[in-house]
Image 1 (cartoon, helix red, strand yellow):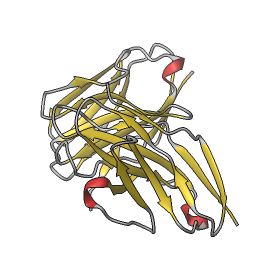
Image 2 (cartoon, helix red, strand yellow; image 1 turned 90 degrees about the horizontal axis):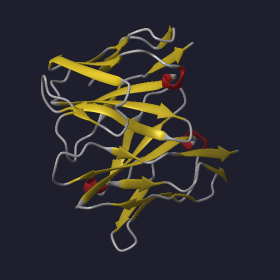
Image 3 (cartoon, helix red, strand yellow; image 1 turned 120 degrees about the vertical axis):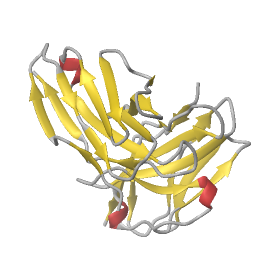
Image 4 (cartoon, chains in turn brown, cyan; image 1 turned 60 degrees about the vertical axis):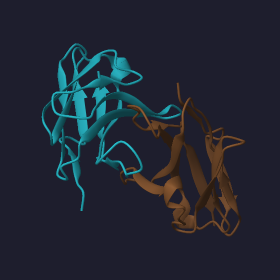
Length: 110
Length: 113
C-alpha cells in the first residue's frame, strides 16, 4: 500500500526564515507527488505538483527518488504562508486515488 | 471556475440516524471522492467513484456507503450515525486520475450526538 509520511505536526518559523516541510513516501509503483494547502477558513487547494516543475508563491519541491522524499521549501517565509500543508501521492498506473499525509501546520511568526 | 459544492456546512445528527451528505460538481469531472479530515490523522479516503454508478472502497469505508446516480453528484451515506463519525467531511472531484488537480468542496462538519 502507498503511504505518505509527514513527520512534523507543527512547524513554527520566524518571518523571513527558510521553510522546509518534510514529506517521505513509500510506494509499489511509479508515484506522482503533490502538495496541497488549506488556509484558515478556506477549502483545500493544490499548491504544486511534481510533474509541473513549477514554483508557486515562492514554494518549490524536488522529488528525490533515492530518498523517496518530496520536501516543500521556501527561502523566506511570510506570515500569509501560515496554513495546513498536505503532501499527497498517486500512481502513474492502476486505479489509485490521491493518498494524503497527516499534514503539517506551518505557523510563521512575525 | 470549478465549483464543488457540499450541501451543508454544519450538521448535527443523533446517534442511529441515517445521514446523507451531498456533493455536486459543475465541471463534468469523471472522478469524485469522499474524504474524512481529522486533526492529527490528515485526510482519509472513505469512498471514490470513477464513473456513474461505479464506486470503490477507500481506506475507511466501514459505516459508510455512497451513491452516484448522476455524473455531477456523489452522495455519502452514514447508515446509522455514531459518535465516532463526528468529523469534517470533504468531497473532491478531478478530471482524470493522474496529474490533474483535485478540487475540493468547502467541507461539512458533522457532529453526532
